[in-house]
Image 1: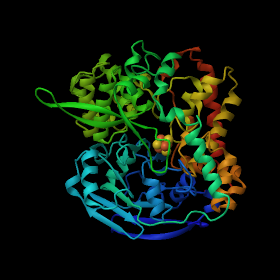
Image 2 (image 1 turned 45 degrees about the horizontal axis):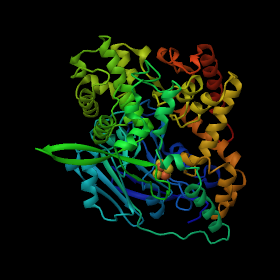
Image 3 (image 1 turned 120 degrees about the horizontal axis):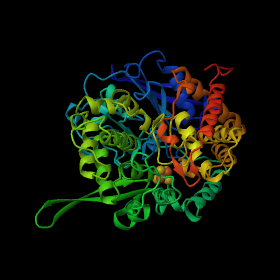
Image 4 (image 1 turned 30 degrees about the horizontal axis):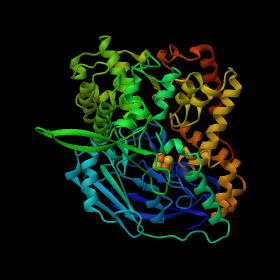
Length: 584
Ligand code: SF4
């Protein structure tokens, strides 16, 4: 299984045929983010739009997948319906191990199927099934039917889209094994454009564990750290929703379309409340002993006098912020109901919640009427939001179809650009200040996880522009190394650079282990080169006025500092994106 090349399956949906290729570049690109960028540089159509049938949809794993705990993510890369540029999205579930057991470093899907289809791949399998009867079905129903149709329970991973993806929404996610997602930047829309309702990866092969003496003790040491020390405790215990009360307490939680940074009634949706009132159980991605996935229950009355059924819905900080605090919905059960509707539609809940928060303020200001929203929108009105989420997923009218392409696109038509909470894409759940706002607005994935700007805002008191930008560049580089392996970023305190080098050595990738610093720098640069080549101009990014009116525990936002950070980080990105000897 250790090899100095990548074993990649490329499938053309137009013909239903695939081929295995051995692609050079292991030492330069490692895997994950690096491999996805390499494959996009070879197969991406830079001068054509995102929905051109020839565009690739890429899924890549890393050199440590299957060998160490929490090496459980897959990097998905594509040209995004959101901005028509290169995009990466990361997802967990069972997909990474299924690819490893199918003996694939990556899956590349091109072409467009003639009929709505499901692609089934494994170590000995490649089939494009006609599943026209699944078109229009929810994510959950599609999953239930596919679990019966395709064997390999326990070894297979089922990726699918809902109506939002079929409608080519730029907010459509790809659901992975029910509780995880390739959430952001519209991967679900890319599948929809390919007539691809689902992908089943069957991990039907096997692989040997490394033979050397180093592997077993190193595995035991890392396993012990993640299970027996407090390092990962918070993720299993309350999970990321612990942040809701913390951020609210320091006035850094975006509330009601960022008109406020805290809410006195936040107790209804804190991590503690979700755990006490709704938590059923925890679950985990395959290969992870931490189990940070929290499942709450939604109860529905279906008969008198007391006939109920319940369903399980996953929750995290980001979904709670987007469908809770941002919409003024401050009841845990009501938030779970909204999350479940978004899940059914196959919508990215963060994008959907932030977009509807803008729509609510626009409705209140008279920029939108019921003719557009189809239901009167009001902060706190969970019933109305239930309908609106469905309308957004289904693309119920021109307004919702435009909103599904991005809040700024709707604001350009209806007004309200100044209060659109968009930082490259709809914002993440942190109103911590200048460094985070610039980090997400300019970050390669426009993700709160591109770099730890939210943490820098909380820890650093000074306003040293050069120091902050250096932090963003270096922190992104460290994360790029992790996502090239492909580690869950929650394990970033465990998998420091030296530990990753030890892991690579232990499994036999000694060349990769020798210079992880250069490796990370090279991949970071390569990703920026591709992003810029697909049209990204960091100098044209505008941070809407609403962010400049934010007041946190530090006081009002410093617009001068924000502008200086933006200029300096733009300069750094341009430097990283310059062509050089790597030739990308
Ligand atoms: S910590 Fe959570 S997201 Fe990360 S691999 Fe484990 S279960 Fe998945």
